[in-house]
Image 1 (cartoon, chains in turn brown, yellow):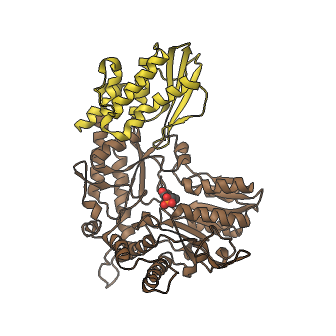
Image 2 (image 1 turned 120 degrees about the horizontal axis):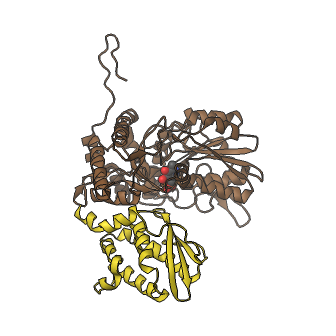
Length: 420
Length: 151
Ligand SMILES: Cc1ncc(COP(=O)(O)O)c(C=O)c1O
């Protein structure tokens, strides 16, 4: 909030020079079907700034080698760059040490890692795993698989029509059989920001660890794993302006140390004989095989890029933009927003009366506008609202009010074609 | 927008808004479900088959305009035809919407089905148009098996 304070001059709000930012993203200059691209599918994957693209190609052009393997110059260089990206990632989420940052392929692999290793160590027949009604399939299916394997039970925190979780029910679901809670920080189909710190505190009253799916949070605001108290925090580099192929599992050291390895292979070992293998130190114990080195380095560049913009500026800019989009979309006759959460970032889901999202999505595409039409890998959320699919516009800091206006105009064309 | 009008012909919009033969067919002795996991389109086709003859057809489900209209027109056009005719029409319809065949579409034989010709300009929508047909063929083949999927 801006305000006058005594003799101080007005404190400028942190802000984003969106025209300059857009020039950093080469793809935003392209056209689709002869119209300037309006990219509103950021929740699926974000676009990449030049700095990230250059970091990846620069690595391949001047430093490519395997990591943690050799004494030769390139291997040392590649290892430094890869481990440098780990340090940047640690700083991003404010983890205590880099040993707590495991690189994975993405959020999905991070969650599978925990479901597998933690499940093996801690989940027994009759135990319970708690997730929520608004999880992405990748935070449902690994737990279902674990529950089937272990003979455990999956419990689901329900939500309100608004798309807010029911904390009263959440409290009631936790009991002495609950082994872990796994919940999204931000819901990818509704944009709900869940009260994660509070949910973690409630679970910790019973010493239940919590995994947070931060895939849709990290692109929009700072997630401080220690301030939140998260035990596990998972996210994907490609949704936060980095390349595909590198994601992150933050895990508290005390917990990570107790977990058995996930995959076996090179890099995760200290020594191997046919009789016995001793495992490598954290985090390498959980990174079997050659990782996606270039993607991790690209992720590091993406973190630098976001740092340079500043998380306050990103939050302020996107907050206004998404509020504008919510207003604009909800005032179109025949358009209904799906989910009206108390606290929202990044995502607006909606339906158009009489028009299936698949049809709308294609007509919008012909106007140069990329949105997502479908169930967004959250079928239970679609079932909850009784719709097979929604249209989802999802935003990043390079989107503009102009683009929202183009979306609104194109929806009018959709209704024209359908005479709805 | 003109290419959109090519795709979303009046007749398609009409069948989408007012689907014919919608609902479970009483007395049906065959049915099968088609599902497109990509977009969530879901169609169940019911058939009353007597020997080689398709006495009656209906469908249920939810999906995009192309899929729903395709199911509606298909059930309208095929009721009363023989199972062989249906199979031949499927091949012609498939050629029509994919544009794969070098031959000009046989518009006389296709009749009302020809309205889906615009789909060939939009390869991602071919599955929407053909999903009800895949369900129909599954129903005619063996009736009660697992849902067919376009993937
Ligand atoms: C909330 C949420 N969790 C998990 C995922 C899966 O991420 P990835 O496909 O990068 O593993 C997504 C991606 O859509 C998501 O939005």
